[in-house]
Length: 390
Image (tube, rainbow, N blue to C red; front, side, top):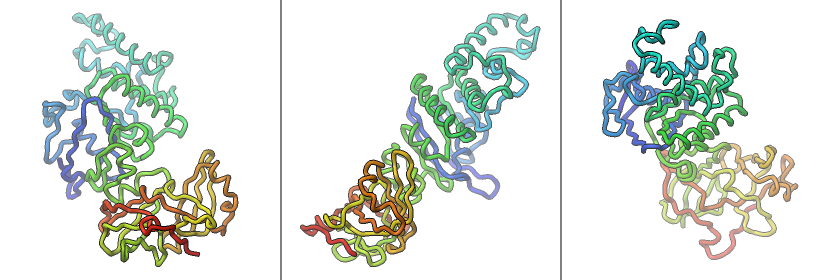
């Protein structure tokens, strides 16, 4: 599927198949095309090429109200002059009632409208109870908190009982505590209803926490589609590796030399990629895949000076000066109890001895494509312990 706005190509050859009942997140930076893709599914924009289907039913050409989808917008899109009850009821009113039956005061008395209104009221009450909005049904949006308004927007989508929920950055306007609470509510809603969810966010933590699968988008393309674990541990491209991870991945420029040894700015990293040809690459190492080790005990791969430590409660981020490796800062992520056993690394200028967990190391070629490099510990490959440099 493709989409242009003027001379700007927003979506390029996008193909995506979502299983029934699945929670799929479109993840990527601002401007990558994820919200445009959602709007195409909803029928709010029209694709220039390609086709959209729900099951075997093509949606191209169908008006939004004729599609079995419901969309929750980032801005909530609530009617400020209406009560919570009325906002939630709007989709049912539009689908079940004639224009005259929707009129205030007299509408309920026209042509069997009373029974229809009774059904609408019952459905609205059921959704309000599910979302714990019973006490707010007669309030207007201006009288609600941000989280309550978000729940009203979700309720308005739920009441239609759609085949697909579309959510466009629904948590982005909330504070951290409320974002976590509503993230849990969305997850529970998906579990209870079994409805297919397509969720848009630029927040990789939301995507990892909620999704069955994640479609990572960049410059109008889906560059990887897989489970959260696959996306995190086996990113297809360097751009994906950089985008995913609460603490940024460490990227080191390396050369693969004779026997496959990985060398960064002349420093032996203690790793070997025997199946990769000589040349220049980039090594990706997650902060939690670097260990602090004792220089005296052996097994260290290299050493770097400490710049600062960041204590984050259960975890500590150790920020190291990577200039010796020809890179920017190198980050090591440790459990606090592990870090506290090594107090000598807590001051700026201390030398930290490090070892990379080779099973978690990632190698990317000059185009940023991940290579299945089969990286091993150089000391083990050589049949002995690796000597750390000083």
